[in-house]
Image 1 (cartoon, rainbow, N blue to C red):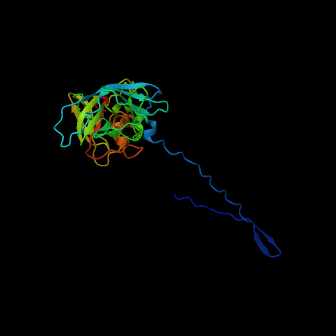
Image 2 (image 1 turned 90 degrees about the vertical axis):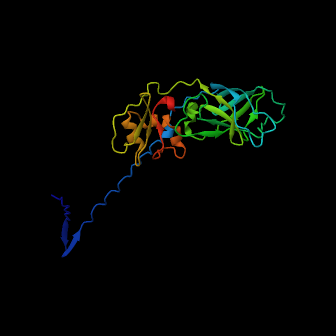
Image 3 (image 1 turned 135 degrees about the horizontal axis):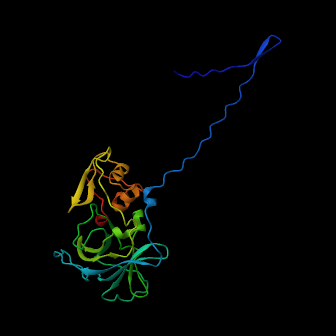
Length: 270
């Protein structure tokens, strides 16, 4: 039954005139501010400690096809350290095998070559589903007092708090990889017990799983799949799924999956 609203007006008769008392003013509803949800990117773990070396490697020349225009100087090679500076900026330090000539400005130029930090692998393991690369040769590159080349990693994705998804340093000439370093990270896993388990297709999570040697390693999204539904299907939180797949944060502080492009479900595939 529909409820009816009944308004009763009290009246008083004075000198033949009917006076109706004015209704009490209705209070204005108070707007309660609802705080915006914290973007998933801001919920990711931050493992950086100022002054800490968090990865090491060795930048070595690799076999490659002949280049049409070979640079006049050999590629930069040497011992690599990934360091967190006092401002929590992540930097790549390279101690050249061949000492660099003295420089008065402290700046560094790598003529004919480009250096990138990337999630591509050079350890005979499969590359992650989506490629990520950060250019390192920039106006901020410098030579330290003890002769190391220092190259800041641009912040880029907010997953810099745990950059261990960057597996390699690559050096290229004319788009060809001529040297590479495999990075060995010392950061602890923020999710040491993380293991995806498929609980079966549900609404907005009806894609195809990827199983390798009996291990659930990935998932291929269907159209209209959502991060929430996919994470629940595999017993993960949305933050854990984003940590497994930093490429999902390429264009937004909230992860975005794309139809048909695989995502990782196993930390070893990150």
